[in-house]
Image (tube, rainbow, N blue to C red):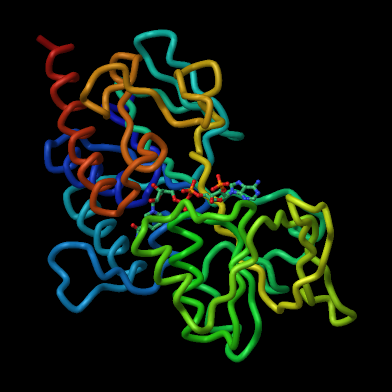
Length: 310
Ligand code: NAP
């Protein structure tokens, strides 16, 4: 049986792995479908302390991984489908095996939400629909693109895309952005950004080349439908925590974020089960805050294991 199993290899999971490994807990880290987490879809990270010139997102997490491995963390590539936290031995079940541990740190992060409208899946990836401007923006040089959403993510993506696109249309279902005031002002004042207010996307439309040619939107006030010509559709309507596999075993709120009943923000309601990063934090959602939670979760796990032995 493992002392501690860490689920996830974003900033939170890898920081937990560094701390748990240095505490001689010999942690097993299970990396899922997106090793390195959301930072691997970012090109330059400018706000992680210690890197005044910025740092490549992939390099940052790869360095964390190597740091954890140096202190003895072991890595396994697998996808956990369900858990059983009902007894003192925590069980994590994948398609091929069941892992057993005294303690668990859940750091499975969050994934971008999609709208579920016709054409969205069909053109997802290389054919025009994406959720990551920093990954795919450069493919839309001198093209018209749309960004969907009205929060800080949408504002950030729209401003970033002005570096490449000939025109960016921000499509929002209301007539006011949810984004912070400074970001909203940058969007509204930017000469390359047009806003489509009160516009609910209803379909992504493709051309004969099999790629996106337009977005269809419905006016939420008049009900009228129209098409916005574009080559790229950037969906930025928020994130969903990757916690479905915890259903029935660990309390989560209605959005799927793991609930921590006390002020620790890393101790869950099951003794010996800890949480870190975007699967529990819907407020800050930063690389540095995820790393901080990973550190705290590992320290809590170490203390909890020590208490069990006493
Ligand atoms: P968010 O604040 O939840 O905004 C999601 C946006 O998508 C909202 O404008 C929402 O519309 C819209 N939306 C959601 N579902 C929709 C649907 N089915 N159809 C049409 N529109 C839909 O998400 P976020 O922008 O990802 O930000 C999440 C958190 O991260 C926030 O706290 C944000 O401040 C933070 N963040 C910070 C930064 C930064 O500081 N640089 C950058 C990114 C994110 P409504 O407004 O009508 O609800």
